[in-house]
Length: 135
Image (cartoon, rainbow, N blue to C red):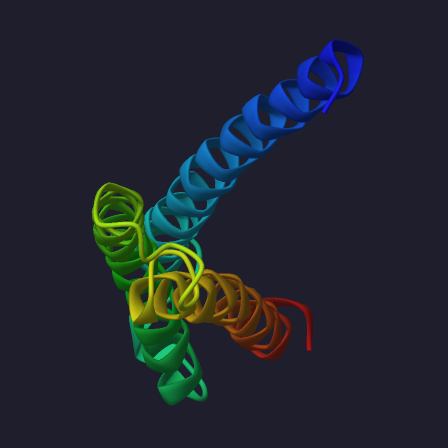
């Protein structure tokens, strides 16, 4: 590989690392913020005596908690995937299987779950808000 291509590859790797870190931080911030704001919304905006479809807000909270847990899991399994890949390099088995093994797969699945859970939580909170304030 020539030097220019190696530099470009290194830039791609660094950008991928940055985006992955940003993704995790953004999901934590959005899920945690949405959870906190929805609790405040319920307490301060919607009269508890007049709440309709309270199951929607409960399920939205569950979705936000799942999103947060999935981000934590993806970080944990991401670290394990790097450890596994390093071990695979050390023992010369990196080409015998997927780098990072099952941990890479779990990390990817949890990334998807965290984003999907956030979206479900936001949709449920929007429906709850519409039914209790706008509807």
